[in-house]
Image (cartoon, rainbow, N blue to C red; front, side, top):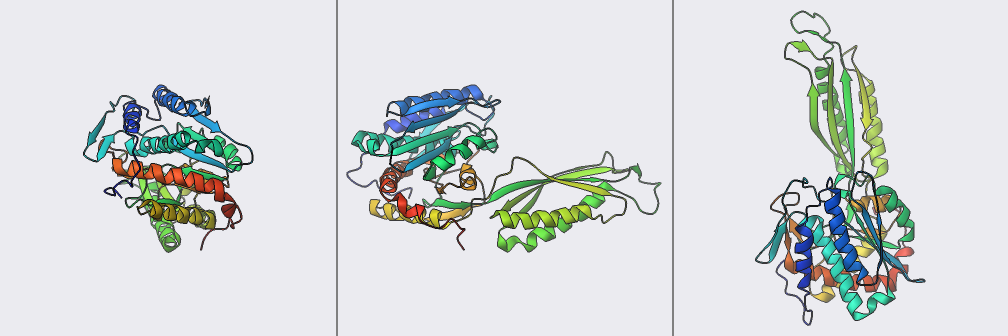
Length: 396
């Protein structure tokens, strides 16, 4: 898709690259509320120029969330979702540059490029007069990179008001949209033993580190038995002990679990609980908890598959390929799906090296994606009843 020529008579709006440069050049890490406020102000400016009513929703500890609406009665409601925060620290110095058919900068693909794609499609619809016939809501949140703790309630509030949600995270490397994402849970396993001198204690040594090692192996085996069903297991952080000659009385680890459905995770959680409760070394105890910042799974459904197939047909008509895929990472699409919305993700441009100083976006793909979204919004407005009648059960 990177090298696909833009179909004639399409004329790309190059001022969108100036807009992208403007917002990429503002440091808007999640922990920089004022930077986020600046980029939200720019987004408000752009959307208000197209007749949207905008409001900022303040969030304690974060920058504000932006809701923009151009709603019309008796028309299907489509919500466009993005986030303005990045992973970069407040003291970093963002910059924007163009190198051939790519542009580079902090958050340029995750996901400021997706936000500009969204605005670009709305601009074209506004200029053609088609925007007057659509019912559109835009949500740009300020905390997605840390799991959307303050915007989750807003997503749950808006989901029942949205017939379809389009999320503008980056496309796949071949232009794919995303129809399913893994959920994420983090297990916090803490093991307790009895401290003692490594050279003096005889018999059973209630070493918390050794018990933790037994438990991690057992947890790993349980998870790997379910790998083909969609479970991924990874120990990411281990702590324990105070010195090599002291029997550890405490040890802990954090375990990252990816899963494809809530029932599947429920089965795994039960196995994990049983392993935690049954000591291998007598006299040791353990406590297993799940962190609150979990992301639910976004399972593939008949509705999401139908939306992706519509994207595929529109792409073919426009002269480029649009496939679909599932991903192991999560986004706000997971939260929309969990709240009952019909959602697809990956409507943004193609890019790569996310969360690094090498982050890049394909310029040709930005303009191809704008065409795709523009046409999708028109088609959805006319055909959304097709998706409302499809089953909500997960695709087999």
